[in-house]
Length: 140
Image (spheres, rainbow, N blue to C red):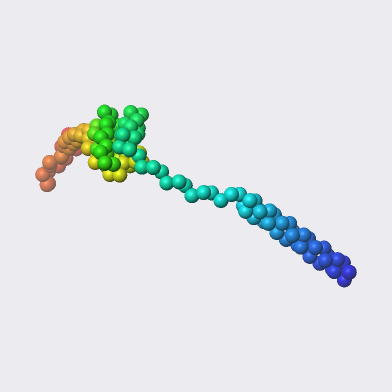
């Protein structure tokens, strides 16, 4: 009986100790979070000029492997894109790039190359044997 009481008491002390340590650790984390200064609200960015937006787009096009001869004209925040895009995905990517550079609206006049003509299907030779005729291969 004494042994059971001793084990129970030891178990209770161990659990109490573990709970205390967990509580202390969480309090320390709370203090660290409280000590950090609150982040100031991001200052609103000044609107970019048309020249800044145009330069940004032109620089991105110059570094792009998917847009050739790319150019942008920007007026009143509206970017007009010209040149040739490698495919439709590159064309829409260029419009997203213009928006990311600060264009309010985008007129996407980029062209994409025409797809190659579809190859003609090979003619399938059909065996036109009449009903009731024996196979020529089987005849001696």
